[in-house]
Amino acid sequence: METVRATIEWTPEIDRFVLWAEDLVGSAFVPEPIGDDPLASLLLEVDEDERETGRVVGVEMAILEFDRWGDLPTLDRPWQLRGWEPLPLDALLKRVQRELRQRQRQRQLKAAQRGASAPEG
Image 1 (tube, rainbow, N blue to C red):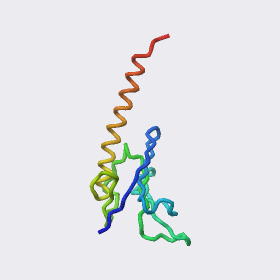
Image 2: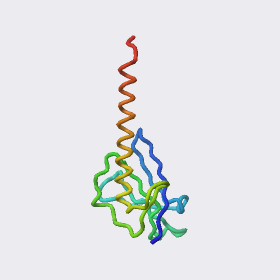
Image 3: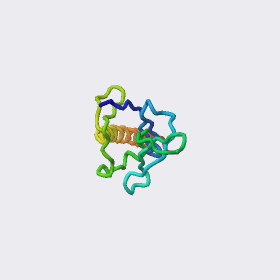
Image 4: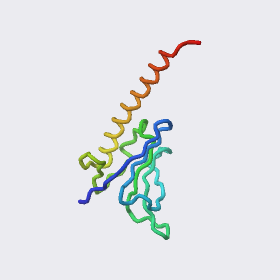
């Protein structure tokens, strides 16, 4: 079973997260909602006739708040970020979510500390 090598983009200010399959970056795709979450979609590759090819190009979601893991389909190929072991898609996304939540907490703590040490004027 071939592993999908992937990369991520995350904009923390708006919690926009995208996981891309590296070999399919630049492919045309259509979003397929994950369950009834309006902020989560599988990105499905389409061919030049705009027909779905059956390949998943990526996932887009508000990852910090995502909790609809049961709605995420089980894919037949593991996904892998650079330096990580191959994982099922849901396991990879859960691990990324834990790490990004921790990073966000650290950012908020630093911002609060800067605000508390700012001189009043």
